[in-house]
Length: 297
Image (tube, rainbow, N blue to C red):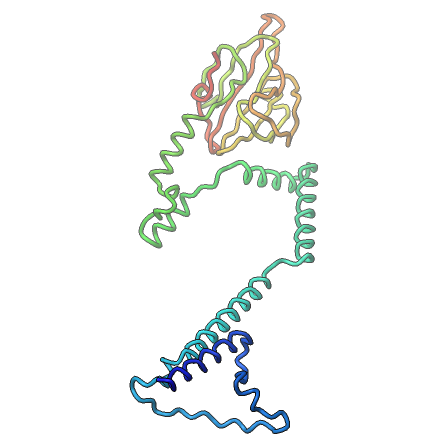
């Protein structure tokens, strides 16, 4: 019993010294340091051989606290080493100052090019302006994406209900019903919509102003044979509005117009003291009845 208590005491001292140094090096217990002569060289370490341990013996490795502590220490060191390697790997993806400067320079160049394009009246610049305007204003059509997804996977994804064609149609109906357009003028329609005229003629006051029915980009401002000075505004969702028989307007090509903003004034009839304006609306290059879009009363 006394021998077993001494063995347990030596093990506890060994664990305490290992926890103080933490490097796994051999540390001589205090009890043996007094008998150790500094003038004598250390004896060569005897290779440790695995001896068969009897079942239930105190020298079995899994019953040895020192052995268990050493296994735990090795696991902790391996875990911390992996953590530091992961941190170094993540830090390698941090953008450098030079890469940020390059990206900022490229962004400034693109911004300057787009600004210069909108200041030019060159035909190529007009095509670029139309493309940029359509990209920023027209919503993306997800129906081709939904059709491709359905062909590949056999149905619309539940996580993206907007790709469902049924939901897409319902959303389009709600959007069309809730869209508000401004009436270009208030007056009386004296020439209703016909396939040949493509628009309507509205009689109004002589001093009435003509307003844009919705926000958009002026794509044409000039004289035409049948409608006099005419302004064409391109809106979102493939909609265009045409305003004819107006006095030379206050707008020019590539001007950005807000809904309800004045485009010009109506042409006057000096004999009757009234004004007239021609108004047409097209959707996806197909003319529709303007009376179905706005109310002139």
